[in-house]
Image (cartoon, rainbow, N blue to C red; front, side, top):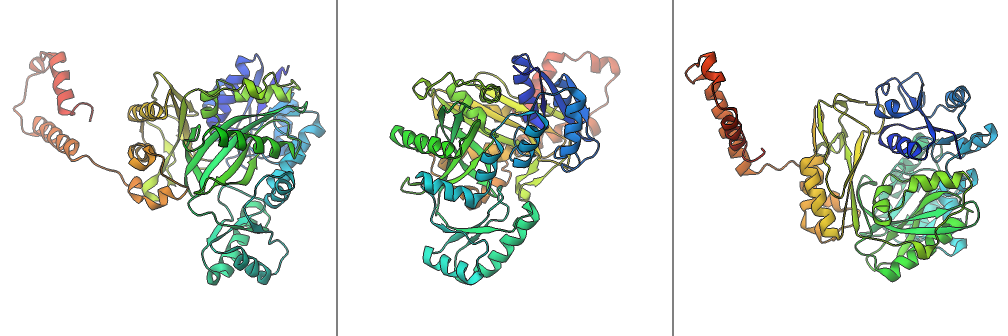
Length: 502
């Protein structure tokens, strides 16, 4: 049992980790930058250490300062959450060198699965299906050109060392290949310090399906089913659900088997996620492995009843899995919407600033993993996520209806958010009938534009006119007359003028 664990992260995931540590009776240490001095994770932790600065490089990714904090606090283990240092093999190695437990996989797994071309080679050897492609690093452009023609357009150029959409270019014909190749290499070098790219056949209208795997340090490995992560913008997930509405039991068993096989190919020893692309004929291809806790882990927790963070910590302690594959059952359906401080109508531009008001939904089957509060300043230096809103229902329809209700209750003042986008998305008939692929948002720009109900607009105009009349044109009232009004009657009138909640 660990006595003290440092959370090397911020925002909602730091809060999630600290809550789990507290339930397990483990003391927590938070780190915080200058903009995060009043963040919820700082207030919740048993100890907090200041990392002077604002940028990620100065603070949450500053390895030397982090280990100074480790020595200062007597920390025994480090949980990196996701992002920042969670998939940096050198950080895992440094933890081992310092005698600190890294709550995550060993460095070799991070290194091998973090390099996309190395991962492709490993998966091919392990018998995991991969997308036809060509490893372009070190090759002359002419070889890349010939490979693209042989594979057949369209093709996708991808950064070997990266993810999150950086260094990716879709090329539909040979005349645009040279420019896309140069751009992908330049962007990859800037984002990851590594300009290697590789070529893959582009799967038209794919779905993005991922499988949660759990592996201990004793050779035991299981899967916890799949998640549907197809709704994306700029190659980043926006809405996730579990289970996938297009995966039946035989396909689920197949996906689980090859996901476990993929994890065992690198002797994996933590929780992780194997990601696949699925084509129109339900053929699946290995995409990548995320060697960390996923943003969307709550939907898997909803349908399995398991605490993935607790499982990850216990694996790091050296405990064997107490569950076998036959013990895993799936109940109901879960949905997650990522709530961001951003403007969808302006290409999802971040909208940092002070939150003046926040009303968070609750009730049956609703969970909100948040890292903000009313009065909190959303900084411009980090990912603008406000929270992860998730719902559970006995059926997909019930989970969607609960999410619609939760989104209607959710109010954020002072900054822009993507709540309106989520509300429009969940009402879209193609989403409800799960007829979508990874290009769904790009093909439906109407999802990005705010929609005004003419009836509600008419009520709002009438209410504004009445208020203007009362202030500027109505006969003046004495103070005693104003205070003699029945407050219950006036409240009813105000509600009527609002049109039932406008």
